[in-house]
Image (cartoon, rainbow, N blue to C red; front, side):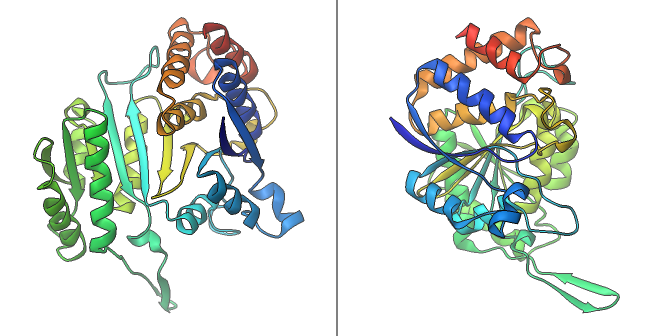
Length: 330
């Protein structure tokens, strides 16, 4: 029996959480869910979108499945995702991007894993107002954080039989910060002679991704580039609605879909649970439940292949009906 934290989010979060929990239960995998609420819906009662009890639950259970939580744009509270990553030191953002059956895309044979450093770069949030006309952000790149994200990328490549890890920077312009990231990648790469190495500038990468994405395997990037490129790669496989993600630290991990909370369709039984289900499948692999992960993935793919899907993928099913179809395929 696995004890796992479930953050059921807000907006469409509770609906897709219910669907995914139902599918996992039907598969036979034994999970005891520690259900935690976070986001907009708990601020009035607890004064914060991320109560201490949520952090305590994840620290205790070591693994969490998280549905989307709304982040206000330009005002309001800071992203719950960013707070989780910083508080728990979830330094590696893992974004597998692979074509799904019967999901129309411009390219076939896309199978890219984006490994994004999660704790520093411009996202460290060190900013100041210089004067009324000038604001300043400071970009932080450290050797220690770069070493561990590069090691994570190469270890992932070894474990998952990947052939290449490409380092993505803008080291031709930012010679000190991105230069340090690139130099550190080169040092780490020497310990993995069985994995091909590649260096590419982020602008060139973006151009090549929209021309011939199948040439890429694992990408390792600083935080800002990783954020942008991972969404670009999600677009190659059908969009954020089918994009999975994970934030992994030394002793705990949070698995979550990439998309937002879609409050405009909250409670309408329209949301597609595929991205959260794919994240849950990745979570099962993380806790070494590979047989259940494979079983659920096959059931999901069968539903996608049959066209018995939610409206966003051209089907007519609602959230609950789609979950029932996956369960039927189990």
